[in-house]
Image 1 (cartoon, rainbow, N blue to C red):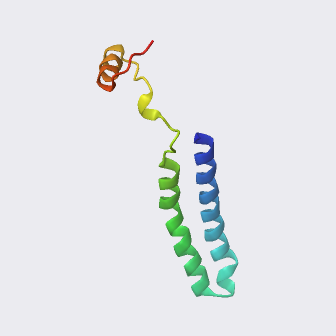
Image 2: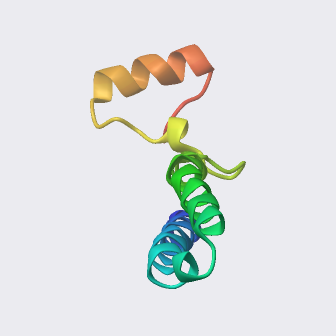
Length: 85
């Protein structure tokens, strides 16, 4: 799960870098408005990549992980109606 999210994040950020570098290294020589448009798209990618990387899947059960404090874990298990063995 984490590997998939990490891979998606790095692919999106890699695409952002490619867009930005190619816009000002190559595309600006032919069309400045297209280069600016590519930079605007590259500017939107990092927040979207962060949201996607922080999104939890349906099989991510992070709230069921024990905290390490036996008293707190017992209290939460009692509230949830469960018993740990």
